[in-house]
Amino acid sequence: MSLFACDKIGLQFPGRPAPAFSCISLAIETGDCLHITGPSGAGKTSLMRVIAGLTKPTSGRIIARPKRIGMAFAEPRLIGGLSVLDNLRFVAPRSTSEAEALLAALDIAAFAKTPASSLSKGQAQRAALVRALLVHPEVLLLDEALSGLDQSAWALARSLIEEQHLRENMAIVEITHDVSRTVSRGGKTLQLT
Ligand SMILES: Nc1ncnc2c1ncn2[C@@H]1O[C@H](COP(=O)(O)OP(=O)(O)OP(=O)(O)O)[C@@H](O)[C@H]1O
Ligand SMILES: [Mg+2]
Image 1 (cartoon, rainbow, N blue to C red):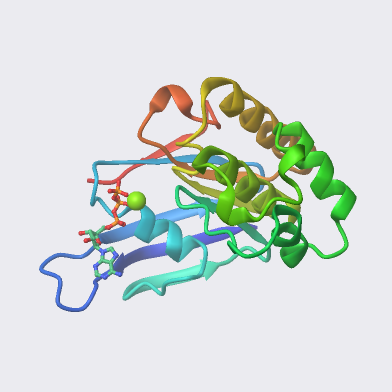
Image 2 (cartoon, helix red, strand yellow):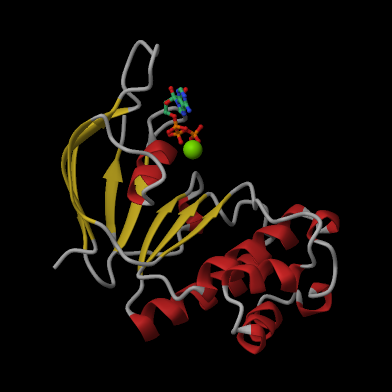
């Protein structure tokens, strides 16, 4: 059975002249990799929010939804007043040692006790990726989530994601403007226009 499936869904924001996207039918299976592409404003983030269950489509039908989703966006959305580790404990209270191991794998273990508000963008994006992986999602949603990383940090992030993908059959849905930085090479592509 699909983790996520939808039939001819569309999303029309009130007062907008055109829908954010329309007539999309999609199935995401265990272990799938899906790359969503298209120009700015094509509806990529809107579709991802629907897959995440954050937004309801205004037409069509959702047939299946995953139980556990991990999400990371270009904007890391950490709780600024909490330390990095407390941000992670917030989503996975019993996984402190795993959180520390993931921070180390992304070369940011030294920032575990640092307030999230004082991280650089790339450090915050790595912490947000750890937060997404810690819930052991069935589907990992990445919306330009690694855009602030330099090449070596990106390579670390990619291998961490790939490990979890291979070990746990986690599906990956990603949006990136830089095709050379696609985490999930060789999967399906959904082109929005
Ligand atoms: N909350 C909202 N209210 C009204 N319109 C919205 C809202 N969110 C997005 N839109 C509109 O929906 C369309 C698709 O936006 P979306 O953010 O999904 O595009 P995108 O493909 O992710 O673009 P980008 O590559 O720039 O991130 C745009 O025309 C946008 O203005
Ligand atoms: Mg977007």
